[in-house]
Length: 68
Image (tube, rainbow, N blue to C red; front, side, top):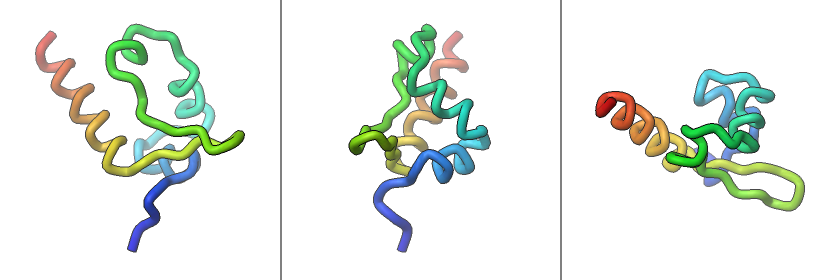
């Protein structure tokens, strides 16, 4: 059984990013970040990610890219 929430390292691995790249996406003010925000929750000082939410986020990015 997989955990309900992924930590930063696990989410970065899932997305094929480095931890600093993923962390920057949580802080970014870019147009992509504003239009389709990266789904995460803050638990104290830590960031947590739901696998299903990240998969939906990728699908949204793909559909936006196709529409352009």
